[in-house]
Length: 115
Picture 1 (cartoon, rainbow, N blue to C red):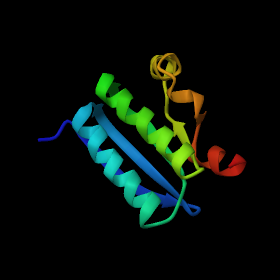
Picture 2 (picture 1 turned 180 degrees about the vertical axis):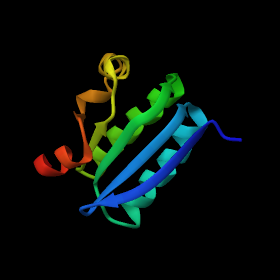
Picture 3 (picture 1 turned 90 degrees about the vertical axis):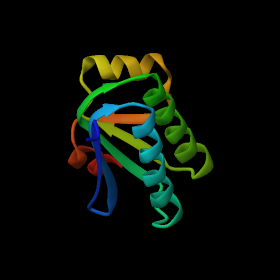
């Protein structure tokens, strides 16, 4: 059994990736595939990540998130929005530079209202 789950839903035209569980290397690879499909097939460059149910993010998970954020912002001139960050996840993502090119919010509705 996998230690994570990835679900892609759409809300008000925005792709939302709901991540549950342990965000490690394998999960990062799977999320990257989902993001590539959103960017290349669905032609959307504003992606919301819901990490509310993410239990922990390890170094390979941080690296994957960082790569995703850079790809979306630099290669596709888009934006990644992160919701569901507790204090420790937010601090970790700030310290590792992930939040330099990503935005955070409290809910999907909040992100959509200001995006």
